[in-house]
Image (tube, rainbow, N blue to C red; front, side, top):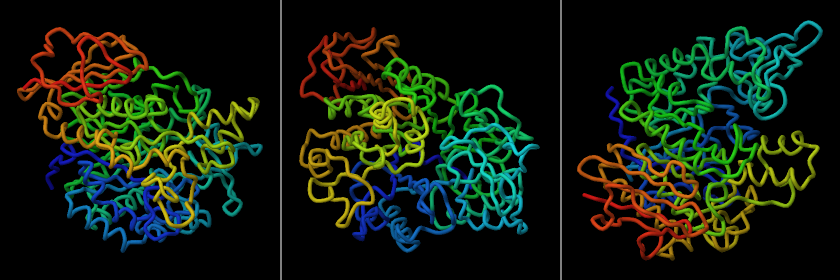
Length: 550
C-alpha cells in the first residue's frame, strides 16, 4: 500500500493516559476521560494523538512493562473505551498512534512465565544465560533503571537480561518466533484502525553477538553493545515488509544516543526506508550530560546546535520529529525557560520549535505551561528510575542535594495529573488522584487559560494554525543566525514564495537586536508575538516574534 506521508501535515498531542483525565471517578486517568476531551484536543489544531501504553500491565514502569499486547487495560476502560476513542478521534480527523514496546515485556507476561519454565516454544523468547564460573554475572552490563542488567531466576536456574527494571526482561529478538510475534502485534492494531506506532527504545532490540563485557563505557555499561546493534536494520526491515508496508501508517522510533548519520540508515526517504521519523535526544541535552540526572546550566548554544544539526542533516533526505517535552523528561519551562516568566518563556519555547521543519509533538499540559513538581519528601515519587536515583545513587550527598537532583531531573514532574480547573482535585478526578497534583494548579489550569485571550494555550493554537497555513514551514530551507549568542535564537524558513524569520529571546534581561542582513523588518508582516507591541532595536525578557514576507 502507498504510504502517503500524511504525518508531515499534522501536529501530534501525546497523552500519558493515567494522568490526562479521569472519566469514571476512580482517581486514574482513562479513555473515558480522553473521549470527554477530544474536542479540546482538536481545538489545539492537532491532527494526531500518541498514546503512551494502554495495555494491561502490573505498572512497575507505569505501563511500559506490558503483560498483554493485544488488549487494553481495564483501568483505562478496556477495548470498548479504546474503540470509542478511536472512532471519535477519526470522526474529528485525528490520527491515533500506539506505543509499541517490544525491547522487553513485563515479567508477568505469559511468554516470560513459560520461558522461565522452559515450555516450548517460549524457552528462548528472552535472553537467558547461566552464571559464569564461580557464580558471577553473565557480563558487566548495567541496567538503565536499577543496578546491574542481570537478574537470577530461581525457577529456571539462570540469569535473564533486563536493560530497564528487574520486572522488564528483554526479549530475544534474534529468535525468529519473537519477530513473528511483533508482526502479529503490528497487524492486530493496524487492522483495528490504529494509524501507526511510536516504537519504544527500538534501537536496543539487537544485541552484540556473544554479549561481551563492555570495556569502554564507565557507566551505563553495555550501551554501546546493544544500541544500534548488528541486526537492527534487518529486523526493522522485516517488521516493515512483513506488516507495516501493507498499511498507510506511520512509525516513530525512539533512538537514544543516535546521531544524524545513524538515523539516516533507517529514515532516509529512499527505497529501503523502514521508519518515518526518529526521536533524537540531543534537543533534550541542553541542560544535562547523557542523562537528566547529570544536570548542567541550560545552554541555549547547545540547544541551537542540536536543532541546526538535525534541520540541516535531514534536509532533503528525511523528516524531523520536533518536541520539547514528553513523559520521560521534566517540564521544559522549568528546564529551558523561566518559571518567573512562565507564560512569556513558554511562548518563546513554542515559537522556537514549532516553525522548524518536521512534525511537532505537544505533550499534555505543555500547552498551558505546566511546570516541575517540587515534593518535600523523596518517598512521594512514584517512578522506578527516580527512586533508584535517590536511594542508590549519590548517597554520599546530603538528603537536600539528593532531593534537588530529583527536582531537576525526575520524569515524575511530567506525570502529575493535568490541571483542568482550579477546583477540587484540579478537575482531574472526582475521586482520590492516583498521584500528587502540582500545587500551582490554582493558577495554572486549562479553565484559566481558556478565559485569558493572552494565555499560553491560545498562543499554541495561534502558532499551530499559523505553521499549518505557511507552505514555507513544511518545505522551505532552514537558516540559523546568531549561532554564538547565548541569549537569542534566530532562524529563517524560506521557500514557496515565502520568507519567515523567527526571533526568540532567552533572557530575563532586555537585549539589543538587529535583524540579519537582507531581512527588512519594515517590509514584513509581524504574524506572531508575545508582547502587544514590537519596538525596533531591542528584545524584552523572553520576547518572541515571527515575521513573514510573502
